[in-house]
Length: 304
Image (cartoon, rainbow, N blue to C red; front, side, top):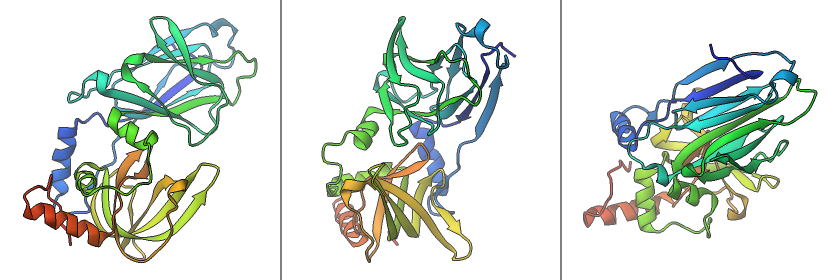
């Protein structure tokens, strides 16, 4: 086992499947089952230990190489520094089209996180920044992550950690930098969302919880038809024999409970469902049938 700095552990989710492979897996569920892609397996690794005496090791630097496209990193009793090199096994995307996003754990402390390239450091996350909604994104080719422990004598109970994801630039732009985030989707956008989203469900809004501090709304969904989902964010409730789940969206969109069915689509980011397009189901049926009659549907999906 290689030498380490304090306790360092990281959880890796095996999500380096290419988009082509994901579609192949999804096809296994088309027309049967619950439409779910299995949640990626998780690997725990622990590298080294040097206890809580840190004077001799405060300048040590460890290199870490990760090949998964998403996961989480946890560094206990941080001493010295870590250089985290992301080397994903994604064959369908050029590195220049990849974006890395990280989301620090709520109680992460004990280290600053930088971008490092050719010896130059750019501060990304300052020690103690606990905004639970904050996501930091950068281009893949901007460098590696350099995690440096802050110089404090008391390192007990200090844990630095964050989740990370690699995705294409368009997805990140849609999530975090959309100029008109709450506008209704066009017919074309809805039909494309049905084909490319991480989840597609028909359902109704049971409740909406607003969280002003996070500037988010949490939508409780009762699912009447599950077409596709990733990571099982919608669960079967045995007592009611129905599917339920939660979707997050921006508070400014003003979502309210109401009658009628919708088609909910969106992405899974950091284990949470984020809303994309959500037309009323009757409107989706019209769009879908019009496109089908003209031979313009980008993909097929059952509508009953």
